[in-house]
Image 1 (spheres, rainbow, N blue to C red):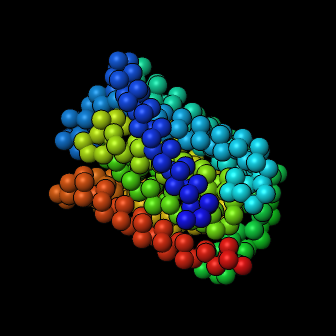
Image 2: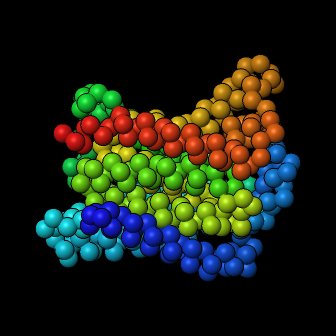
Length: 343
């Protein structure tokens, strides 16, 4: 086994163990603070049994991932390269984590307001959008400054073809994609273990691609993300003992799109994020159709996971099928970009 593979397995394992241990400490605290999830009455009636389940559980994998990324970066600075998997201590991993952390902080504020007011409302849509847009613009500027990003839109399945864009246009595109991706992951977080499960193949995809590219600082983030998600699923699988809340789902969205942009291939999100996109589109289509037809619906309930529930699917089946679809599209995405990094 190569040093690279050993380090990947170690990072995933450490992140998993840390998340599980943090969960054992965090869940009782959340229960003691009565940080329970409020369930919307317009949702499936059987979801009302989830009322009061502790939320903000995303803190457990955020802390684990943060610790690993910081230690890895420091280790890289000490090792100073020399062919080691530690690399040269590049800060790309910290940038991606910091970007995701900002979104996680926005989610935490939202969750905290919901817990305080004991209802399923938090930050207004306007404030959420303004904060998320600011984070997206800052991340784009930072990645450009650190030479992780060029205003050339790489097209998967085209060997190494990119469409050059003016920087202002690219920044508008990047901000739109980042904010959209983060909120799409948030919408996907509607069933026990759903968003964490469908993101597991996405994390594996970024491990494979960044390792192939030789960007170990990004590989470390993806490894920590994978281990953190697997550790969180110990508590979040059906029936969930804890929910990640907006704290976790917005962080996940930030981590996924942060990795895509740091790897300079944002369009790959169309493939690896196919479930996120389907969930979001189902919501948008439902609302537009409802308004145009004065009350008619295309889906029995939106977003998409609720439609399948209303069709009689159990939560476990929805999660399993959506995760399988996510995995298939991640394999397709890998086939579409691998040639670029083998040049």
